[in-house]
Image 1 (cartoon, rainbow, N blue to C red):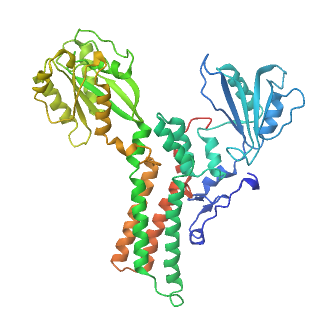
Image 2 (cartoon, rainbow, N blue to C red; image 1 turned 30 degrees about the horizontal axis):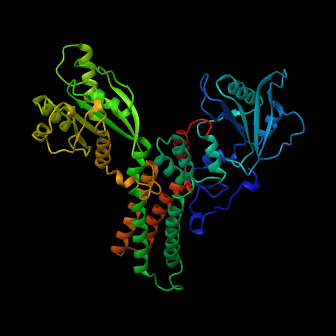
Image 3 (cartoon, rainbow, N blue to C red; image 1 turned 45 degrees about the vertical axis):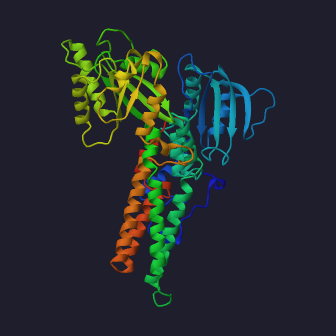
Length: 500
């Protein structure tokens, strides 16, 4: 890493005596082996775009490391007098240096350190898409000494070189995986450091408090008494801020993983028609014959910014056909695993004993959970309004639809959003969200802050205050990566795609 790439992120004096290893950029490692990731000088290469036969007009092969430019000069022929300057696009051919055989006609983008994603020299070959061109370019790079990158290794180097902190790096992964506009918005907020700023401010406050307490321990006779009410107030404020950030965890998980919705009901109540109407395509076969659906049919939708996996299940009834029995067994499993169940019934048939039995089994499967259930009264176009008014239904949110006529879909979506309290997910209410790892670290910080408050309440010596303050500081530091272990890095970046 070049000196220009380094960033002054050194830790406050209160932290220095408790480190096993300090990375050049100031990230604190709990084990020495993590620094090996900083020391490696290998040039890495990977395909940075999705590739598939006969698809994709452009494929990108990315190099990063000290030898990236030298490898590019070896395999890329540039006609004319095009200068090899940073942040310029060159036109030419990728050639096999052993035979001079052209492999592809391509563009080359050169980004020299520290003005690159990894803060190392980065070269990108913009080749023709598909399979063969990018695979051949990748092979030539490896033959010239580059190593195939591990999942997320480009972003890992960006983190270790001070280009990104850990919340920004995780935001990159979330942005790539985003399934809705709102998910992309909150992920981009993470990339832009909107979570980093408040976390580092809270950690800074705790470090200042720790310094004040330790000063009273070491120089008790030379300093005025500690302002205990002020310390209490600061700890309470930090704890409240941590709890406010923790409150975004559930919304963040919903935006990242989406909602699994199961459509269940007796045979021939219109479950498949409902799926087709909702997804606006013929995802499921629809006939008048009960038991047509034998397996789970799914469709991916976005409702109110939330990714939703809709699962149409086989009609649940007593069946003698072995294939239908398997489908019914899967239907019950899907209903148990779903985040939300749409129990569908036929308006013309009304609330039958079979519906009541199915409702009871769904309730039993969801015992002890708060997963919502919505009743969907389908085929309302076949009955009079007075008949609907006389239906004796359980006290559950109810939606009336005529799936074959595309009626009631908007009401159904609104009922789902109401059931999961989606008003919390509006852009005005949700600037950023946290993931499970960050939530676990913040929970540890909250617990440590609670323990500090209890320590003060019990009038224990100041030495006891420092123990829990350090725990809170360490937990907050693990969110941003100011304090990190190699195992944590491996766990986080192994979930990235190769090439990012």
